Length: 215
Image (tube, rainbow, N blue to C red; front, side, top):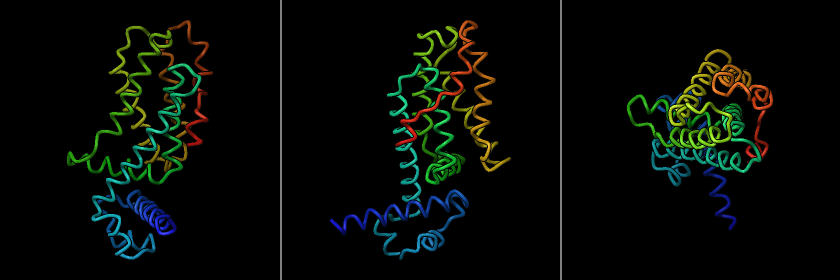
């Protein structure tokens, strides 16, 4: 059992060390040599768990994806309206990007690999599908205009969030990301919610998921 625990801890150490480098240097820029230096482990320890840099990168993307799915499930258990859960989802994604190096690395690797059509689409598709499901509920609950198309709306929201976080990274190293996401909803909500629901906008903008933060 002790040996198994050490193996788990070593694997986590490799993943975290690699994520820190992938985030800073990108998939191409980070070499296995520099990853080893960052982890302080031997080449044998690394190759015991991962056969290549590509396999390590895919593992980081998978861990980022698992983190996102756990948050989606936690938000789904919240006693909140669908539109509030959409806002929660965006703010939770932002929180993870700011505080979790594995999430940041997974996003950077995905975008980098996507340039050559090798990037995995699953993380984005899952976010979009979740947002679409919530948008359908929000229409039924009267919090979204009835003529809004949920699939198009979902793609737009995830695309808008992606753009907001990239610009925040370029301008402030994401130190203002929480405020920029709030700005996004400040501008969006009046245009997508029926007028009689507008008094609820202030409350909806403040929606956060305590359950997702504990995961």
